[in-house]
Image (cartoon, rainbow, N blue to C red; front, side):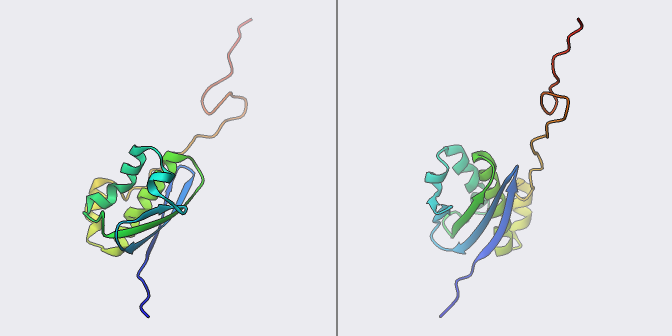
Length: 131
């Protein structure tokens, strides 16, 4: 019995973490057990996730299974996209330059800035009263 080949990668964005498994198949995509369209109701997020596959013309060639935790919708979508891009590089090293040029292999470092003590928020201060 032949073992199915699976390529695993991790993607992160904001506070979201996605564990992505890529296997040769018909293009079926599931996130946390649901289909991609069910889990991400916004069409823009679905498009965002499919970008690395479209970039290397592999849209119907791989099945994608992702486990996502933490963060919100856009953070999770960004994490899945990075995971897919990293898994595609494991499939074929030739894809690295194409994905890198498109910017899909770059981890987005932007995080929420922490609230500071003696202040209302990260940067907002309490209102100053002169008298």
